[in-house]
Image (cartoon, rainbow, N blue to C red; front, top):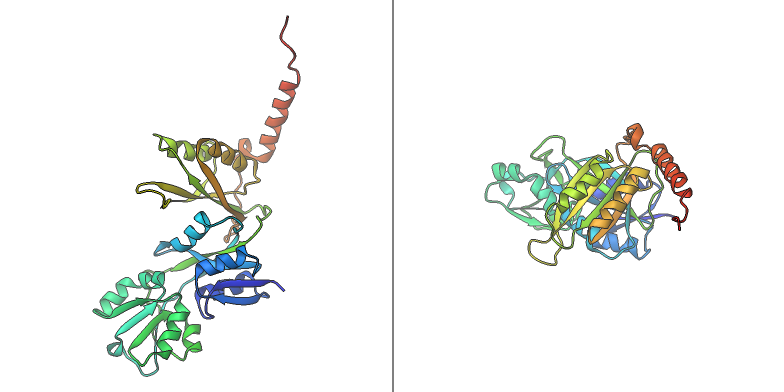
Amino acid sequence: MTAVAFLGPEGTFASEAARRAAPDAARRPLPTIDEVVDAVRDGSVDIGVVPIENSIEGSVNITLDALAFGPPGVVVRGEVVIPISMNLLAPPGSDLGDIKEVRSQPHALAQCRGWLTANLPGVAVAASTSTAEAAREAGEAAGGVAALGTRLAGERYRLDVLVPDIQDYPGNTTRFVVLGRRLCRPTGADKTSLVVFFGEDRPGLLMRVLDEFALRSINLTKIESRPTKQALGEYCILIDCAGHLTDARVGEALRSVHRHVADLRVLGSFPRADAQVTTPEPADSDAAYASASRWFADLVAGIDDPPG
């Protein structure tokens, strides 16, 4: 049976994403994102599900770093986007005046920063490894401890929803990535994630990299910098682009970028959660690239030795 690891325990948003990604798989909740990634890498599980981006707080840097800087052997094979409803969970009978501390995963706390400041001023906040772990801790505390998390986590750890939907912005969503050990075949509605390590700092290098995609009409859906952790001021660039690496124009763009930089790491080429198909212009289609290759092959086939 397929096994799926996810950021646990049961009752996290990641547990719901894992259920959607692999509804029939044996479930293995793990306490940290790094442990989920490692479990996929060492073959303990077939797939892993971890959060990578939230619509309020942006990227989950722990996940980005595990994929960008960790050992090879793990790639992104899919993505799941789920709506996030952040609830203030507390022991039965509690009211806001009883709360002395709020616990949750750091990204969850950040998504509710404004609400907490306005409604629980002066109340301490504390980080937990996940929203469900925070609920478990609140359920076992002597009192005065609340958690931010799902209704399911509240039910699981005998907590009431003291205040529902306290995220600072409507439409709160989180994107989770599905991890495996082999790249996916193209589906026609794909996305490719990569990391560019520039190496030697040269004027215009970033523009040159971005131009390789622009020249081929490849849409970049995300661009983000991260420190390489090697030296102050040294950054790499994480890019998501539309298309699969086997698409002729995407493959040519990657080859061209690779020529200019110190390293190019492909994190995955996988089906888009929105199933949006990108139709290239006729000049950028696979057929146009194939035609150009045949034309060039015919051209060089007629080359002969120089006279004399």
